[in-house]
Length: 394
Image 1 (spheres, one colour):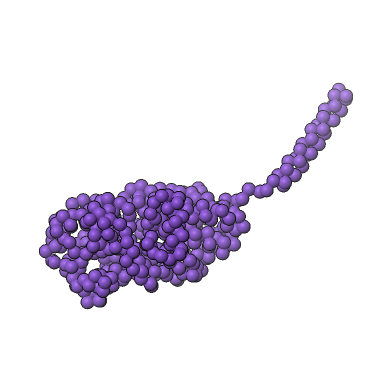
Image 2 (cartoon, rainbow, N blue to C red; image 1 turned 120 degrees about the horizontal axis):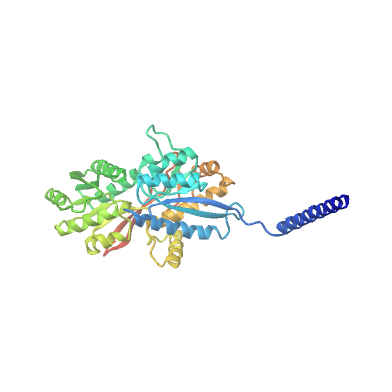
């Protein structure tokens, strides 16, 4: 029995020594291997299906192109960014669900998107509670970054300009470049984006000496606009302002032309989709214009370089949402580097301190309400193609 106990004790000691040596060897081997670069998770809350899916797909292309370029060198000394994408289906409730999942389950340090005002506002409670910064790509309504009391929302930012600037630019273009004296407004009564643009355009067009001779509304589920367009035609306007999203706008333009309404038509960045010409018809879009964040025909060197890279990767012409998506990812990477850490609180502070950031859609500086101060462009549609008309500085 004693011999057996001695043998068992000896074997146990050998086993422990073997494990210790093995552990040391393993540790040395691990130390000899370079540590894998730590990934930093970035969330994307995008409209990849539903009413405005065109926007989300373009923005995602912009994200991925920028991410590819950023990850060649990495951030914070070589760490890679990893994109975690959720489809909010162009729905407010689903946008909240995606935002909640990204911050609670995926543990992202920041979120890019959504694309629209309504979907962005729906995500605000989740990111505010989690204290994770969100940068909307196309939520242009002022209340996205400012609450009802007028206080700036600490964790909400945008890379697009706001509706007041866009509405003022549109009104000035209508009155001075198009020489419009009498305008009709046809807006979507179900979206804050459209209602706010209509209000601002009307206010500023009147200030410039213009007259609003008709103001009508629709809802996004409408498909037959001819009765209302007939009413508008009877008022004999010399401009029709349609601040809506491309699916409705395309049908309105098509039906207006069929009724013989051949006056200039003008809208906002919600027109910016390659599907607009498919819905409206290329010829029907002649003599139409919209305010936007970017034109692929701009000769700015940053725009030229972005266009070349985008076309090489996707074999397609980039639209404004692709450019905004690209800018948003680049700005976020820049903020992470300036923050010195992949920490949501520090990233939030770095975003707020952004000054003179060179972006494709213009050199931008964040103001006190987390809005980028930068230029807008006027796009003219010619035979279904976007053409650069002019750039308007803030």
